[in-house]
Amino acid sequence: MTVVSALVESLVKYTAKNFFNNISGVKIEGAPSWYMQPVNGKSCVYVYDHGDYTSIDRAKRKAKIKMEKKINGLIDVVIYQNAPKFNSSKEIALMRKFKKDENLDLFVEKNLKYDKIQYYKDKKETFLRACIDSDELIGYEKKRLEEIRENVLHYKVDSAFDELQNFTSDSSGKVNDAFDELERSAK
Image (cartoon, rainbow, N blue to C red; front, side, top):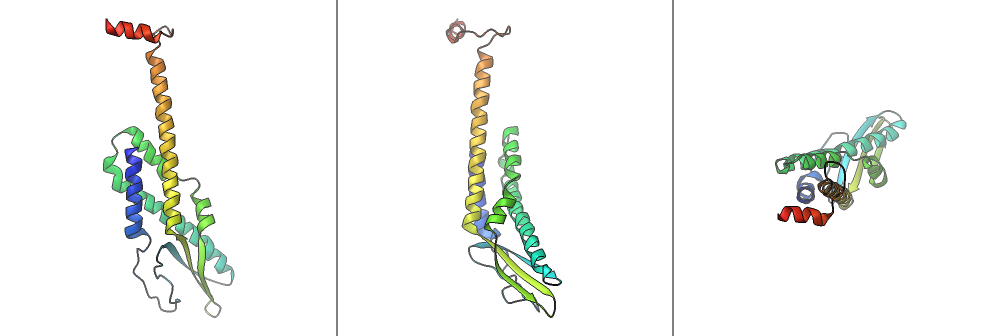
């Protein structure tokens, strides 16, 4: 549980500090003024594509993939920062489970907003900015961590019951009375 708490703390600190506005602004000749400019309170990706009008749809698909990679990169950094705190195989297994999110594509699909799309017909160029609100992203990752924490807790409870069952059975498989066990240990 301590590891999960440390991951949540690192996630919030890292995202607040670096992740959402990791660029201070880039000017590209021929690109719109908003392209590669940070947006407060949002995590954004920027995509360029060349071609006819279908380049807009390609740029949207690329933005989704790019955002998933960006979020996975965030998770990699948080796990890397906390790696020295992991000292058991159970904690390492927890981190592996945390790292792989089977629902990330659905989260991105639901929350990614294409807030700027500009197509230059004469040059056949598409510029796109797609963003997710930072509060949505942090909330989603916290929820994931909470689900993992609950699964680990259930695993620990099940393991404790199995251990207790093994403790109260003798080598023949016969279940000993708990009072018999206490009586033997008192002698």
